[in-house]
Image 1 (cartoon, helix red, strand yellow):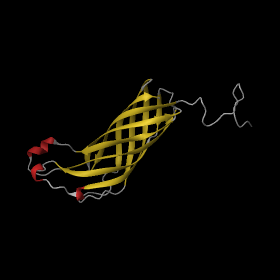
Image 2 (tube, one colour; image 1 turned 30 degrees about the vertical axis):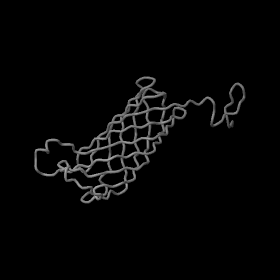
Image 3 (spheres, one colour; image 1 turned 90 degrees about the vertical axis):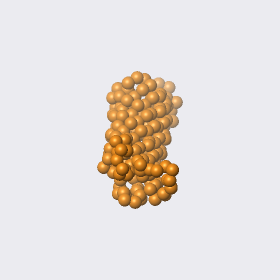
Image 4 (cartoon, one colour; image 1 turned 180 degrees about the horizontal axis):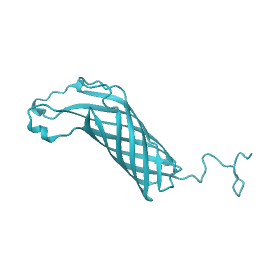
Length: 191
């Protein structure tokens, strides 16, 4: 059996060949999830370097808020919402990237912060309370169905699951951020 395929000039094939193509992209994402049993909106961005069309590595993150309900402002009851951010390193294997429709598997390893927000906070008499905030670790594997719209734009539907370390905010479940999110991603760059 032959260990390598030889080219016309009989050169040895190498891992870091001159024939490999690299690129990169920037992306915006919009996702839906549930946090604390309430609808939540996530908006994110990421940038990645693409190695040989089939593997991307980069940085990114997103911000979120749950249950933004302006109708409650007329009530005298306090309404609490959760808001925060998370981000880190993305690793993304891409299967069959040259096909018009293909799949990628981005995985996020990172860190985040969450806070409890009162809708009716009296900003003139507000005092910082560190117990209503927390920092956590996050691991988020996803699957994206990508559509090559043009040579420099991809549109993807995404589904993923957020795993986090325990959240330590009074009167909240430690698993409050764990859950599924679905979304839409727009990628722009050289693929």
